[in-house]
Length: 263
Ligand code: GCO
Image (cartoon, rainbow, N blue to C red; front, top):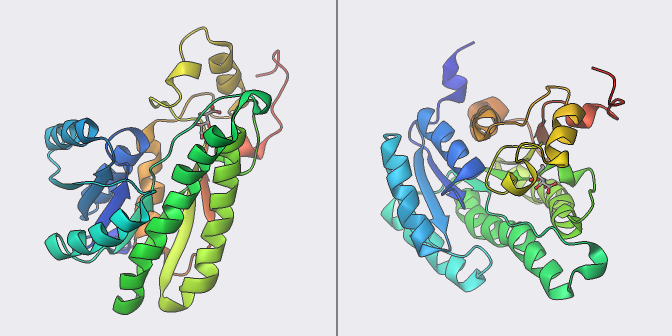
């Protein structure tokens, strides 16, 4: 099969929050497939630091200060990006936060903050980018869901609610926009070794041992493990895939797990 199916040459990809971790790995994967990379970040220092990290990888990026929850800023910045770089052919809604707080101890404000970034942000970005995609006859939107789109866990109620909602937003975007040749899908990471999971991943942390045993692959994922799924969902190879969440999770969602004494 021709690798042309996965060729992103001439395409412009916007990866929100693509300054580190999963977002950066996905941006690097899309760049390797030929895409021009645009990233946004709401923290100026993170934006500057990421330019250097991308440059170390030999990847030139277009970087913009933008908070995905600020609808007015998004509505004004997307046209600027498209004027300065070109039409956004691929949107990866990656920007996200997590707060690990038991429900009984979490304030409504804390709950709403997570939903705002992780669910309303992709809604705002999707709306702003889809208008141009519809006008141009097509595009690709990838929403970074999670295995928490399917399962709950102590202390991550807001994050799981947002990621479950993002799975359904993905399906609703597909319902409304597929007829415009826009493919909207999700990627659902399992447990990935990033700064977000660092607090629960340190050697000897009980959760670290639990995840390694609970994941059939027997390891934490690397951010780079997600790049292939992103290239697939950003390319011609997925032109008839819509409303789907592709789980990249080492098999964790395939199993109820096993007793501690079983391999
Ligand atoms: C947690 C983790 C998870 C992972 C990831 C799994 O606290 O359980 O942070 O939420 O980050 O989202 O897909």
